[in-house]
Length: 50
Image (cartoon, rainbow, N blue to C red; front, side, top):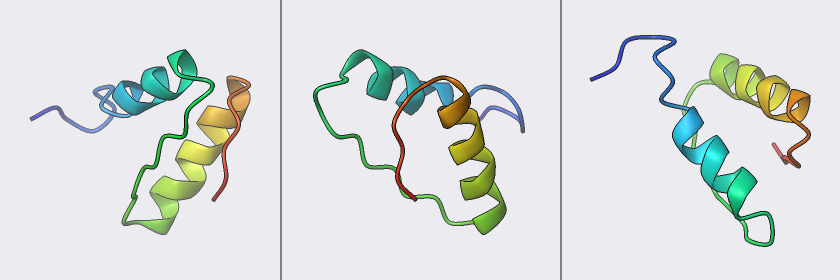
């Protein structure tokens, strides 16, 4: 198991980036993590819906 900040989110972010014609659905349980991920994803010019 990777620690906090270990790059686990990169797995689905890279998948979404490489499959730009597809939809990637990610379920996040904590509101703080959702906001953090949305900010991170938008900063990399990947479309995201909360």
